[in-house]
Image 1 (tube, rainbow, N blue to C red):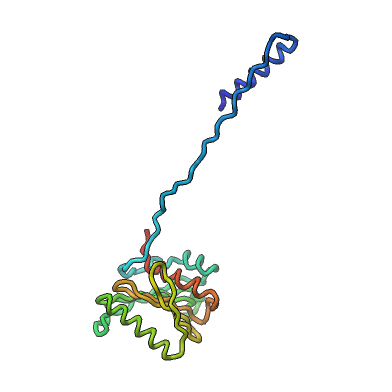
Image 2: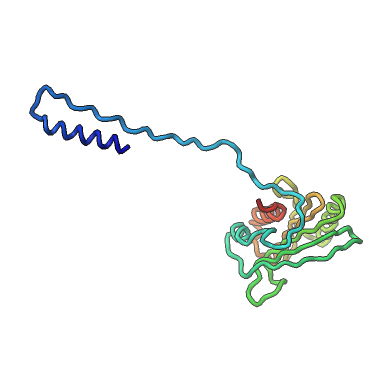
Length: 205
């Protein structure tokens, strides 16, 4: 590029010196440099997928606070808190964690805005059965039941009076996302809860 600019300047100087010479032809200018064309890659990028993951020991490994805030479109107060449950062999439960998000200062777990729970069971059939039992219990209490997509899986949206839940299972693990105190408006439930459920079942890359 520097060579091109130097060549043009030299040619211009030569024209000024020989302005009175009728026999001197003007020097042709160099063609403009070619701008390289960048073609975007068409290879598919790796997208994290939901898996039957081991139970994390940190809420940042369930749904990071930044992802939670971005999904909700607002910043939740406080720090996420985790409660590690106990095994319940009588019902085939081998582990449980609950993550509480959006607890205001000087408030406690019941004041959380969003709660995400993961439970593991002895086998896939037990996990599915426990989810089905939860859905049946909520239906009997008058909740509205709707099947929704959670990534490539299916989940069940349960709409109660003061709390809405999205429940489902993948392999030996069940998941539940609770919208407490009607924090997420009804019209946004399907746009928000499945995203959080999918994230909860997707290990960090």
